[in-house]
Length: 130
Ligand SMILES: Cc1cc2nc3c(=O)[nH]c(=O)nc-3n(C[C@H](O)[C@H](O)[C@H](O)COP(=O)(O)OP(=O)(O)OC[C@H]3O[C@@H](n4cnc5c(N)ncnc54)[C@H](O)[C@@H]3O)c2cc1C
Image 1: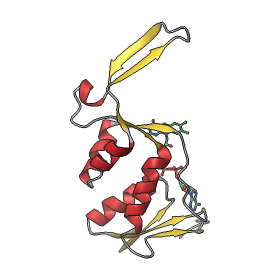
Image 2: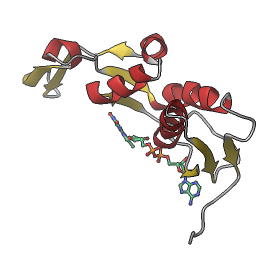
Image 3: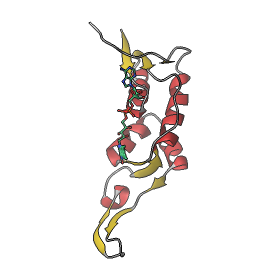
């Protein structure tokens, strides 16, 4: 069985890694002609960090991101609205890591590309299936 993954975002790329780790072959199809490292800052929550750790990517994530210890919302004049601990500081077994979306997608893409010459096929848009 070979699994077809549509979309080379962080979801599709990570799914390819997990399937590969389970010995299940897959191909990622991406409609874009190339994968560009775009996006904004995102938070990799502890349950997501756990999954990245399971495929050996936690160290890499630490290199490109920041372990978030606390989340603080404040009024525009600085008055605090809410403050709460995150990740390890909140008692989770895995950290919360703030990272730029593109800087996470890029390394994931490079790891998945190493799974095979045809592991990621760009310029392919899914228009239907049966
Ligand atoms: C401002 C902002 C802040 C965010 N903050 C967080 C956060 O803190 N934490 C968090 O977990 N998430 C956050 N997100 C959401 C985050 O972007 C998603 O969790 C993540 O990018 C989803 O990845 P994905 O691979 O599922 O989808 P996407 O990144 O959307 O990737 C989908 C891919 O599929 C391709 N595609 C689509 N249709 C087709 C088709 N028909 N055929 C072939 N290819 C196709 C697209 O070109 C794209 O490359 C945030 C999003 C925004 C906009």
